[in-house]
Image 1: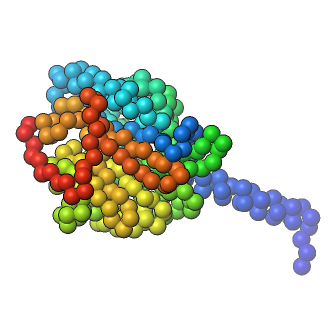
Image 2: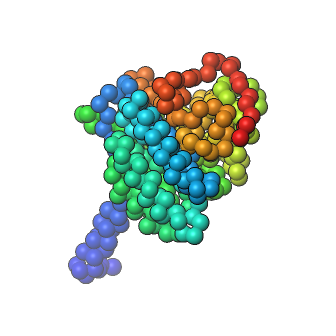
Image 3: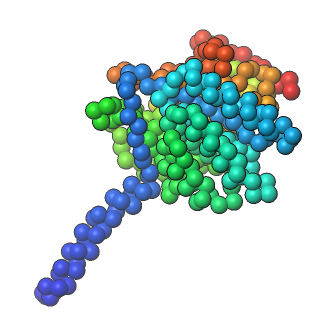
Amino acid sequence: MTYPKTVRLMFWALLCWIALAAPAAFADSHRNTRLTVSHPDSIRILQLTDLHYFSREPSTWDEFNARTSQQIRKLVELTKPDLVVITGDVWSENENGSGEDQLRYALSQFAALEVPWAFTWGNHDQVTDRARADALLENAPGSLYRGGNSGGHYTLDLVSPSGQLLWQLLFIDTGRDGLIGERRDWIRQLPPADVPRVAFFHIPLKQYAQIWEDGTASGIWGEPPCFEREDGGALEILLAAGVTACFCGHDHMNDYSGRVEGVELVYGRVSRTGGYGRDTFEKGGKLITLNSSRRTCSWVSVTPDGKTWHPEPGERQVMTETH
């Protein structure tokens, strides 16, 4: 049976449209952007976490917001990063619909850093209109956020001045429940990468608790890890995706790390001034250094007075909150 020429042309046009549309849809579900770095063997990333603007009593907001912003500016001045990564809990819920205004305030503080920055959602980062918030984040000065059409998840390629892909960073929205469900599906569906990957998200994996309990981890423990509904299954998915290190926040009083199956699990140093655990250890950030030739990821905790810290192997401190 033969078909008229017009039908055959329509059929081939449909096939071509499908072939072109499928990659576009795939790319849109795995939103990606890139950042060119000047020194591939010394890529500097400053992780900030749990800023909690507008937390505690309203009478304290101006003071603590200003102090927190002053501290993160100082950290940027000290570390001179290529990229700032904020791993969630930037503002404090959405009481009376205030989340968007609090987000706008935070964006103004990030713009003042004058450094490219990326963001992952935390459980306290709540708004009335998520699509509007995504648009604000994507269009903010200095922003590399691309999670608007992909559930808050996206990737960032770090490339050399010649355009060579060096590393890929994953940014995952762990919501209120942790790295479960469609968040795992998003990781599974990522295209293969020939370079190492580093993941940033807010809520820790279950293995963060296990590495402290079994003595694998080194650093500071101040509270039980709160991995919410994550059951430990996400690590295998991250490992299969080529992730070599994970950086999270969420638990303000923890700053430790350990390896599981070759993946380093690292807590960020809480950055908020005046949050819970404020007298346990000084607030600051995590300076991460990526070496592209060696494919290594190293880090130190850094505080606004210029001090840096990395635990010695087997160094374990148990601390308790005083306020």
